[in-house]
Length: 108
Image (cartoon, rainbow, N blue to C red; front, side, top):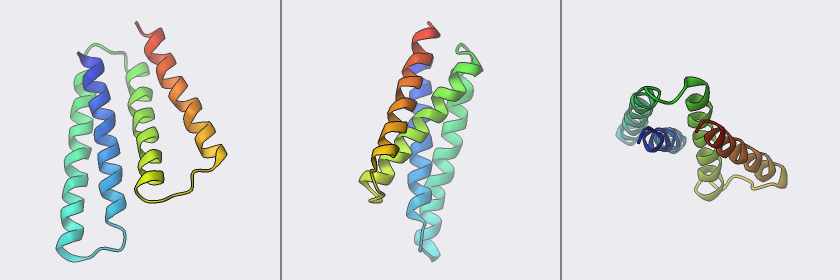
C-alpha cells in the first residue's frame, strides 16, 4: 500500500510543478489560484512521502519520489508547455525511469 502512496506523492510533485508552470506571466487572482494549487500539491506530496517512508526505506523512497516528479515534470513540459523533446532529453528520462524501476525491484 505504501508504494501506491509513494506513487501518488510523486504525482503530486508533478501537480505542483504544473501549477508553478501555469503561473508564468500571470497576475492578480489567477496567479494566486495557481499558487494555491501549487501549495496544495506541495503539502500533499510531502505528507504522502512521510506516510510512505513508514515502511519504505528513505534511501529508496526519496529517489523514487523525486524520479516520478522529474519524469512527470519533463512529460508535462513536453506535452503541455511545448518544450523540446530532443533525443538526449528522452534518452536521459528513459534512464531515469529504468533507475526508478530498478530501485523498486531491489527494494522488495
